[in-house]
Amino acid sequence: MRVLMISWEYPPHIVGGLGKHVSELSPALVRKGIDLFLLTPAWAGGEPFEVVEGVKVYRVEPVREEGDIHTVAWKTNLRLQEKAQELWALTGGFEIIHVHDWLTSFAGCALKRSYKTPLIATIHATERGRGRGYLHTHTSEAIHSTEWWLTYEAWRVICCSRHMAWEVREYFQTPEDKIDVIPNGVKTERFDRWEGVDLTWFRNMYALPEEKIVLYVGRLVEEKGPQILLEAVPLVLARFPSAKFVIVGTGHLLDHLRHRAWELGVVHKVLFTGFIPDEDRDRLLKVADVAVFPSLYEPFGIVALEAMAARCPVVVSEVGGLAEVVRHAETGITVYPNNVESLVWGILHTLENPHWAKMRVENAYREVVEKYNWDRIAEMTVGVYKRVWEERQRVYW
Image 1: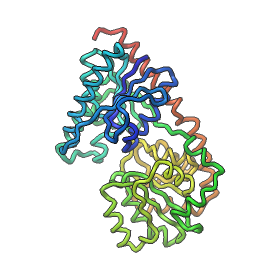
Image 2 (image 1 turned 180 degrees about the horizontal axis):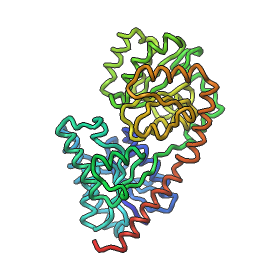
Image 3 (image 1 turned 60 degrees about the vertical axis):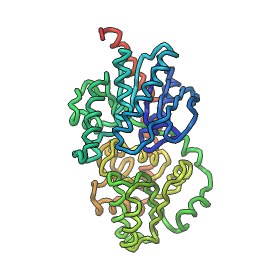
Image 4 (image 1 turned 90 degrees about the vertical axis):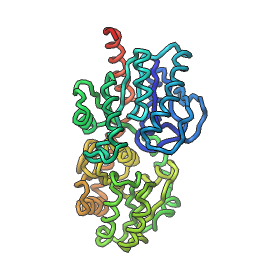
């Protein structure tokens, strides 16, 4: 089966979970027998064409101009659509078009109509969800309308969690029987290779030998909750003074968080690393004593899954997809969202009870291997492809 996948993110351009999802799902689909053509804007460069683990990757120069993201996306989609039409002529056509989120919906919907080919949409997050139920700007309203349009045009909609499926039903009135829930995944090999390797030298770059590392990895924006974690720092230190907080990531809150650390008098116990390479992030997850994800909104929580794959104890807010990935007291600790005292309790419980944390770590790793591996996820995705193609054969467009 020949599939055209269109994604706003793909290496070397990865901003969040969407890019990670596409880059790891696509080769797994090839292993399952899919002839996959992947079309993406070249935001961070890369070859115009290359084959990556069997995936035929085509990069198109995006529209680089000032303006709201909705307008920039629409204009860039015109270029993606033009390239897709070239590929259609080159290959003789595709059985399925698969787009990820609204950012490539314009090209996906146009191609669907032009070639009478089924469109599948994976929804990773929603604009209204990011706004915690509200649309605050005209751009947000435009994005929300485009998301509704995409879910309406799609033959089937794939969501990464039951919570995201709820959002799609609630915000877009998408019929429940049109939605498939297929989770994100993670490659444990990224972390398994560090098992048995002495990373003391690496750990010493971030904390003193006697300190316990409390790690945050993610964008520094309100919805990810780093501001909640920072407020918890002095309360944790009051009872566990050997804790060291390492905050990895960039975002518009960075300067505010640095200033707040100074106001709280904990600047010597909080390290803001900014952006770090993926390999360093993976090693940090291996050496950390607890990884904390205090999100206010989280469609899935792939970073928590990565921590579980690294055998790092996790503390997460019980919200969205995180509440599905992490089972309280079994594979991690869940705490109340937007609640500093609850977050402090979760961190202290983990640091003060390492034997219990170790038991949760083993449970979490086993679950990642069995449930969140990419081959299983690719098989589920191929099942959706086949169902849609078979249905397409039985109907008049």
